[in-house]
Image (cartoon, rainbow, N blue to C red; front, side, top):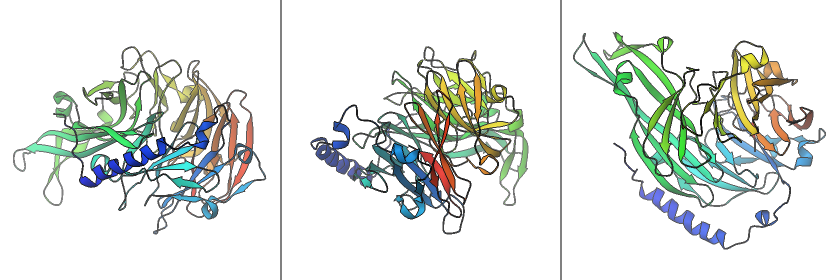
Length: 448
């Protein structure tokens, strides 16, 4: 049964306040957006810092906005840890941005303000202006949110709660029934800072698959199709073996992991937009690797209108969801291994550019950090060498900025200095731009 989530009064007050602030903003000229045809002003870089216990990359996020000239200048030195702006978040913020780079969006991750949405204007350097358009989304998508900009101006937050195992009988003959969680979805109007719609429903696995032990423990990386009629949400599918029963130290029944015997393909949850109704699942026939990603967007609408989806962060596949059928196009399969002639590639971040061209950050069998420019139409790839390959960790990477012919990729080994690589995706030429200072337990995790 699907229902609309009832929000706390604090959340309702947040929406009311945001609406008032938005009304004021809409009546005030924004000089950054008035000059049509003006070139991009800033490239925002983000870096993570350690928490109080010293855990690398777990303590928050710093931001700094470079000009395009600074970005490609190898003599420009950026110490983001001393001179940057701290985005609000107890742990690493989940950051998105407008396509023109003038606004940065953040939903805070964990802590007292986990689940709170903030919006900033980008004015250059460490000058990020909090617009005050704050929303408390914790009642919908929790205090550790999974959310992305699913289309320009539209954010989608998703959360799966209570994936509990249900069983019958008594020891030592308990009978497995199913493991099922509740899906929660929130639409976020990034322009006006409001929540037009929410939904809540049980994860819609068919009963026969649930009985076989299949369940989903996490959902992530929602994307809106070109027609703005469907949202596609990546799923982390797992499997128990209902026949392999044991008991833990407290005497509670448990069932053995059976992921090795998974038969169903890569799974995507689809709901109608903007109603958030009619949930259903689609399955790939060419891949069984999960597509829920980690901290980076891995689904994009192609120039041709199809959805291109990476099996990140443990897979090497790009799959396609047809714009005509809204299901997987099983005639299409891009293998990064095959394109590069390697074994064990794992896509860590993926950015569709234009006309089938894309850029990927990947490792090999969990090690190193590599860059490839790929053509999804011809299923070819070109490795772009970088000087830090053996020591990079892309596991927390969040975004890759693209503007016109240039791709901006900050590369820093943990705790060490690095460079902003600026790659012309058409000519495949590389500029080692701004120098990025390092700090213990820290590294750069994105560009916007």
